[in-house]
Length: 467
Ligand code: 5AD
Ligand code: SF4
Image 1 (tube, protein in one colour):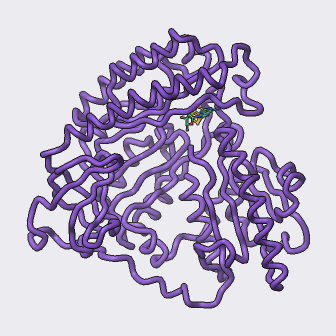
Image 2 (image 1 turned 90 degrees about the vertical axis):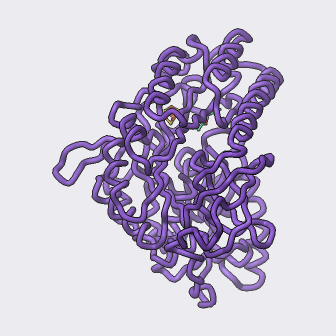
Image 3 (image 1 turned 180 degrees about the vertical axis):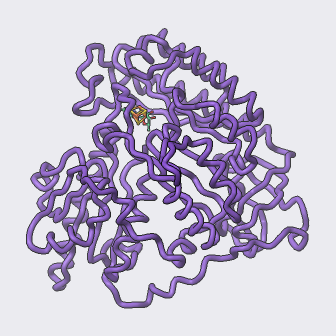
């Protein structure tokens, strides 16, 4: 979501003449787009600001002004405290204020600006759309936020506080954005939301629409051949969404469905509002709808009060489900969340040891899944050149990277690839049909970005942390 938000901030700055630069020292404006989900992500902001301060001083010696902004959820949560700890910062603004960037920049020239309200107006009504050239330069896959915020209040999580209550964008606004993406050559769209399957946006006739129906509408758009969505809550996997997995070939056979723990005691303490058995039964229903679906999940180890028996229940859930991949984290107490003040906080060494065991199990499952694909032919959407000349990198339906020898003209095409081997983080393959027998991509290489040579103010955006 921070990648998407950073792109939208870039789009908001484009009319002001800003262009992106990969070199922070060239930037007239630096925005750190931050993540507050775990302490490590949040602390990275301050070490990064230390480096940026030195850069700002060096540029000042050369007579060049540099504006520094902190955006995202650390900004939302810490507000004024950021300017106190790091006076180098000119602007602090939360995720709901990105459309106000031009105004914030103007105000920052005459003193620090801190903006962390949840404004009454909807930023999506005010943010400019990406230009076609910007979308082409970003490639053939794109993110599209359909929902923000969360009403679930898991006891470990800051999201309901930093991103606020659940808000869904109207269906027509999403369809418009997806059509523009398709017109600029995008073939795969990943719908985003902190609780994306809680989506309930209004349709053109004013009726609430769920994610399953939204996916069906998006699947009708010519050019959009692949749809994904993330991140989901098990409680919100309704029948219409299962039907979308069963019936729409555009919906990829891949689902990220965080469970966090396999222990009922811990799930209750986390306020997850489902049991282990609920999750297992849901997995059965999902697999009945789409038998080849690859499931991935998130896990937290060392939640307050987690015993060895609770942790063993998490391992056994992983054994029982069989995941294609998973993200796992040591519990990190977050200020203002109920779990941070619970008794029974688990020792860091115990957390680290449990995390190691869990990750070993998940890695073994991930490798077994990848190995099971060797000898099979998969549809691969080629996205960009690989490391070696003549290679392209694409994605399998199951979101794995696939590397194959293929002509650059196939970027943007979905091509049959025979999987021939497994690397540590990717599959290797070869084109299953001769390249000239493969339909050429409708959108070959992204158009050259001619704006780069225009002398304009530059902006560097960095997404901090990963949730
Ligand atoms: N500590 C550790 N992990 C967390 N997550 C969210 N909050 C915390 C926390 N306080 C993890 C969850 C969630 C993912 C995005 O980040 O697993 O699904
Ligand atoms: Fe956080 Fe996800 Fe729980 Fe919402 S559902 S509170 S975003 S972990």
